[in-house]
Structures are given as C-alpha cells and as structure tokens.
Length: 297
Image (cartoon, rainbow, N blue to C red; front, side, top):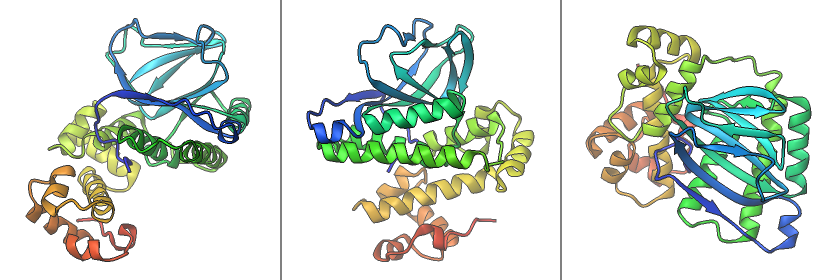
C-alpha cells in the first residue's frame, strides 16, 4: 500500500456506482492527488453541483486556505479539512502560498453523513492528522488502488469508504488523549520523506523541507520523534521493502531501486542489520517487520 506517500503522477479518479445497497451506506465518489500553483484555484461550496457529497482533503506540502462561515483557516502540511457539498465555505490558494499539494477523498452515504456531522459538531473543520495516522495511510492506499485500476467493484469501493469512516471515528476519539504536538516543521519534513524516500534524499533534504538548518533540524527531529532523521528514513525504507517482499514478486534489485537504495547488495546489508534477516529470508517467512526491526545506531 502507499503508506509512505511515494510521488505519483497527479490524477483524479471518479466513480459512479449504481448499487443502491452500497450507495446508501458509504460509497466512493472520487479520489485524487493534485498540486496547484495559481491563485485561480478557488472552490465555493455553494456553487458545486455534486450535492450530498462529503470531502476530506489532506495537505501533503505547501498550504492553502479555507474560509468557513466567514472564518479563515490555514491548511498546511499535515492538516485536513472536512466539509459537505453544498456548504458555506470556499477553499483556495492564497497569493502568499507558492503551492498547495494535497490528496483528497469525496464520499457519500448515510454513514458518511453521520460521521461528518459528528466531527463538525465536536471539532474544528480543520484537523491535524499525523502522517503515521491510520486515516492518512488508508487515504493513500485508496489512491494507490485507484491509480492501479483496482477499484472496479461497488462492494469493494463501499468497503474502503466505510473503513475510512471508521478510521476517522477512531482517530477523532483518540485525539483528546493524544498529547503529542509535533511542530509544523517536523510534520513537513516527514511528509517530504514519505513522498521522496525512493529518491536519493537524506537529512539535508529533510532539513530543507522543514526550512531549518541541518543542526537545528536534527536536534528538533530527535526531540520530537525520539529517533534521528537518518533512522527515520531507514525505518521508512525497510518497512516499504518488507511490504514489497511480501506483496510482490519484484527482485531484490528492483525493490532496492523502489525504496531508495543504490543496489540489492546495499539493501541486503541494511535489511540484515535492522531485522537480523536477509530480504530472501524475510520473503519466505510470515514474519511482521515490526516484530524484527531494530533501529540502526
């Protein structure tokens, strides 16, 4: 699954299922990934024609603004807004923002409406979601399945939609007891890492994404997450390699290229050091990577 925001070609996928049994519960209308650069990007909730739909839009990089009932909110990296169609709002790219990269999901159905009504009555319409959170990871997974043409059945689409609704409920329920408050700079660096881990990036590039000096960034990252930037990148890449080992028939060389390592030998070296298993041994096992992973020193 696309749990690490690997860069993809931007696109939007729309669905028009006629199965009433799924449409009445929770169903997928559209999912997309986009990046905008022009202030001409401006959507009004009162002018859209797809009535009875519910939008979740999550910022990957840059920022946009949303105005709801006359109040403005900044939607920067790691934050999402939750709105209905129609509604008294507009979201747009302000002139001060260089870009706004986001991934979005539009759903409909009775259970979706109940979820959105509950969230809007108890929380702000703009909510921070940690990159590690289940709703964000599931959103990326749904986009990946759509991009690979794996969502063709209304029951499958409804199942994904309902699961997303439940993940939202679970996340919102745990927010009150979730005391970790990560700085925006660290959120931005983590989203950058998830989007570019397959490229030749390291702590310097993550610091640039955080708009901090390498020294200050490294200290703040360790203080915030408990691990160093390079440890985070290593864990990210090895987790993705483990997924590919169990879910695909890619060669070790192909997997190395997909997770940002120069060759199969280097991937094998790091994989063995962090899991005490070779990639080949892991592929033949039914082990979970979380059970074996040891952070590199």
